[in-house]
Image 1 (cartoon, rainbow, N blue to C red):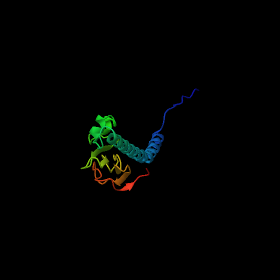
Image 2 (spheres, helix red, strand yellow):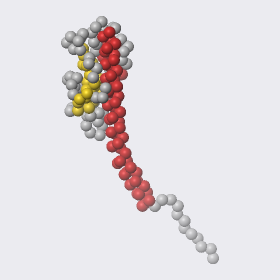
Image 3 (cartoon, helix red, strand yellow):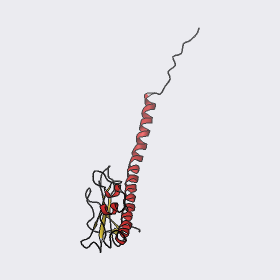
Image 4 (tube, rainbow, N blue to C red):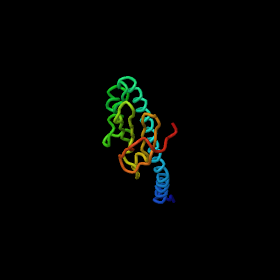
Length: 161
């Protein structure tokens, strides 16, 4: 007599639930690290952009500016910074930061360049620090305390220049 076997193929519900749980645990570990890496990359980009603007200001003062420092618009017009950097705003930030550069009251003596993080807290934070520099060329940082609020002066903690 021939016996008929009822063969079922596939995964059981328990096996699928175990796989989903493992994927959930891996995601819970990986996502915060990914977000922290993104914030660190944004901050590194902001520091590099501040240094670019600092170099551009020195070049502008020595050439096109006839001894005076310039704004980001003037630096862009002289071809010293790109339009992404000079047009950064809350609606179109560069790597999560808004950049500004303005000459001081006496444009021949000083300027202030700032980088303000668009969002400073929460899961969608673009950075936790703001940056600033002036004619001395030192880049300073301070903890961001509000969204899109720049440092008022180039004071704070100097980064390793």
